Image 1 (cartoon, rainbow, N blue to C red):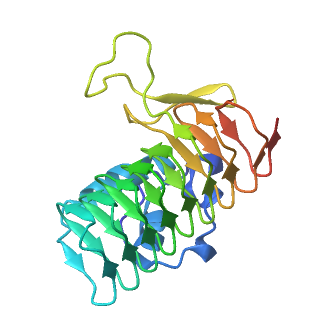
Image 2: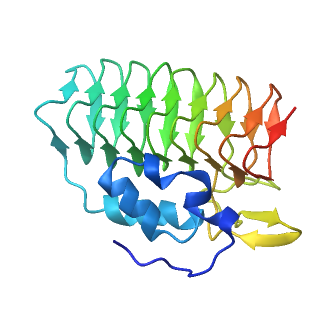
Amino acid sequence: MRTPTSPHPDERLTPAYYIDPRQVTHRYIADLMAGCATVFDVKPAIAADLAHLTATIADTADVHPDARLTGAIRIEDGATVEAGATITGPVLICAGAVIGAGAVIRDHTVIGPDCRIAGGAEITRSLLVGRVLMVHHAFVGDSILGHGANIGAFCTTTGMRVTGPVTEPATTEITLVLDDERITTGHTKFGAVIGDDVALPAGTVLSPATLIGPGTVIFPRNHVGGVLPRGTRIR
């Protein structure tokens, strides 16, 4: 287990605020969550871990020959990758996950147990803890999705601030405001943290560094941002 980088962060910046450790069934993801003091530590930790990943397909995994796999990809027992899916490693596909036709999974992503991704969904540099449902055209990047999160059609996480000409790689650090204090993330791209069992209605766009507590109810609207505590209801 890695050593947390900060001993006493605000509770609302910790992984455990958004993701109940009791629901995390995968050993790697559980250790990852326990070893990251803040949600901002997760993405670099995954990048460091997946740098050592080797391409492995478990004997009980079902990978269609017409799926497009490139790079270091580990596919665990019982996972399914259907024809027409595209995965570009390094990527970890955990047990029982289904990557369906039209899905695009890009580098430095962990798809947790029993997630279902399909229908033109695109995911990059993100962690999906488990049982995430994302089966429509939608984009998740540089983000953390809790257990049972549901991403509706045409939802988007925005990971980069645009205040002038766009440069790649991005150079402006993403920040957020918490209790009137500006918090630095240490990232030039950071999308969202979506807590356990949160559903994003179709067409929702999230601002950079949006943090959504578990049990939050979001009624249909086109834009959400900021820090939403547990159980928030927004219209």
